[in-house]
Length: 246
Ligand SMILES: [Zn+2]
Image 1 (cartoon, rainbow, N blue to C red):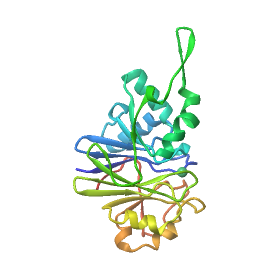
Image 2 (image 1 turned 120 degrees about the horizontal axis):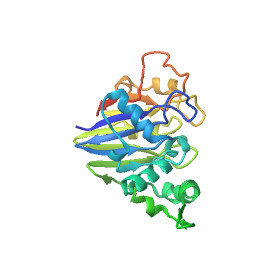
Image 3 (image 1 turned 90 degrees about the vertical axis):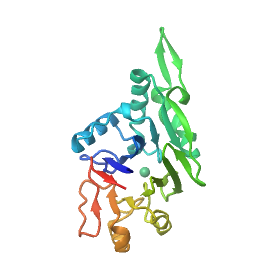
């Protein structure tokens, strides 16, 4: 059964929630989407909330939607943990735009050198990761999942997702301003996570509340600020640890 397990639901400034992230699960295969800071604690807290033990050892495939810190600051620690304690590389699904900068501009400064036999040894992306290149066109196969991408309207290249498995379909807005074209891309999904924020580079609740009821019914809100409470019952907040059947 295609399920989604919510790990983090907060925005970049949250003091109450982990950064927005979740796991897609189908027939024992897990595809993790995004990697907020303190990722092992993020997994631990979700496990405590839903009673299903999920640890870093269960994460072999991960997709990073974009390089903003609240979506990838945990990657350094997770990559090091896998290398040191599991002797494994993380399979990392990235768009060309994310792949072009994630090592040189985000990760190399922290884990690009290792101290060994009294001297610094240079490491590269391939020492920690196996790259699964994502294409903007057509379907990307990752385990049992068929993943389609769409660029969102955000400060850096970011990808919304439409993921199919087992005859069901899940949509994720990623970070974006309200975009009717993106809503049309997500609309075929049986379950949709859509971000909500205070406007600016994010989508407002009022914009989502204006959508038809048939669409809102299958939508849950993610990436919300600490002080945000839906003013009415038009849309429901996603909770950390929540497991939803797609
Ligand atoms: Zn972002």
